[in-house]
Amino acid sequence: MRALVGVKRVLDYTTTKIRVKPDGSGIDLSGKQIINPFCEIAIEEAIKLKEKNIIKEVVALSIGPKTFQETLRHSLAMGADKAIHISTDLSPDQKLQPLIVAKILQKIIERDNFELVLLGKQSVDDDFNQTGQLLAGLLDWPQATFASQITIKDKDVEVTREIDAGLQTIGFKLPGVITCDLRLNTPRYAKIPDIMKAKKKPLEELQLNSLGIDLNTGLEVIKTEAPQQRKGGQVLSSVDELVNKLRNEAKLF
Image: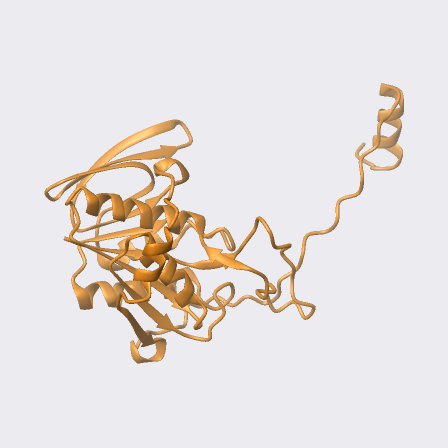
């Protein structure tokens, strides 16, 4: 069985201050970038399944400019066998919307006959949380989202999901799509020898326009704005002072 894992490159939220471009056309992506944390969890889970001899081959796929190959090399260093880079200049935060990504994944899945798709439940830049669900719909495959535990035996899959009320366990038969949540695993660190080996692993590059995909989603991002700066709080001396400010300054009643 072969597994396809989608990985996205995002700004490093731990070291980079997120800024909107002066013209409002999107986010300034010039800062340090890393693999999306949920995608890294998906890669780790696929590698663990391979180590258990459940999966024979793990293929990582990313969509974006040339720099996205660094994210694919990171996935290869972790233990993925191959990588596919869908090359495009479309901005990952504005133009590559979930439906387009799902269509691209569908095309590659049908071309290479993957039976399992593992994705992060969402990316930390746009937080759409839509790609896995859209992909399952396009393929007419079963899906399990927000996975915190995955068990596979032959073609039978059991997934424990994180939901508002707690945990839910569901099952389905492969092929299928699974999106990975935070508590599924802790991704490994790539060792120096593995980083060196990753440079020799196969990385296929395809041009997005060669796939014949309709890029029209019917949605257009008109403008991106930063949230307004919040005013500092105040320490009040009494309830009467609080009521006075709510009534006369905030005009709440």
